[in-house]
Length: 65
Image 1 (cartoon, rainbow, N blue to C red):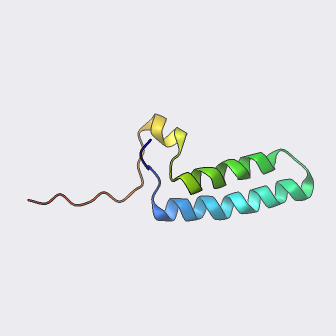
Image 2 (cartoon, one colour):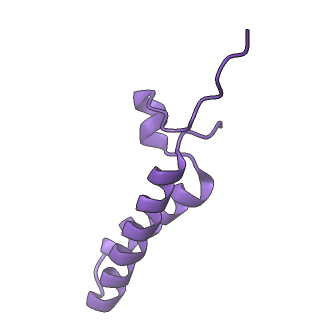
């Protein structure tokens, strides 16, 4: 399982996950689980949907000659 989330993507997911999870807890709805999922993918730096779609937002090292 290689990383497929870049820094900006991880930050956005973490902030959105915290907001959605907080709203889910406040309103006692299942949206909290979606927020937790976003935070988990941010912490792991890996998104299963990105892996399925072959998307990678990590910076790729420049190739050396």
